[in-house]
Image (cartoon, rainbow, N blue to C red; front, side, top):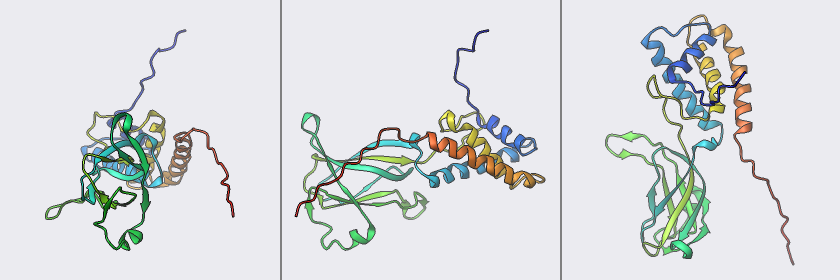
Length: 236
């Protein structure tokens, strides 16, 4: 016998929700069932952002720096920055220089925040990302110090964690690697068991399965580069 020759299996949102309902011993029947499951699924992906680094959501970006400008907006769906450098010039002449992340406590004690030079420190103001009718969108921001002393020379290059995309409508697939599908189904089933009448008795079993599948997926979704630790030499 021959194999299928394909490896494209995925679940649409409606299939994923239907599978989760079945694990709760229930059926997806009404539009409200779909709506409440989609809400739980969006909350589940937010929970994943709090559990640690999701490697598939790492993206590189850059911000051209302007002379005298201290504050720069990050994309609104940014959770946090993992790494960042200041890049000088372009092409063969470009050089990436480390810029150190500091806390709000350290940034607040800088006497002259308007001093200009090559930026060497950055405070990341994560903010809420919410949209306020009066004040506008609260984008995550970076505050650099010193402020750049020239334009068209420095570029802030970063690697960020972005939010997992929303559940969407009934025909879309989810913004996750296929490896996380079992974990997502199990997690949604657990969350639904807390809301579906008669499914609460299954919640502990569903939670245990969810945690086990999350750990398996998280253990696989990690950096596999070798770790090299070199001792420093100190002279007196």
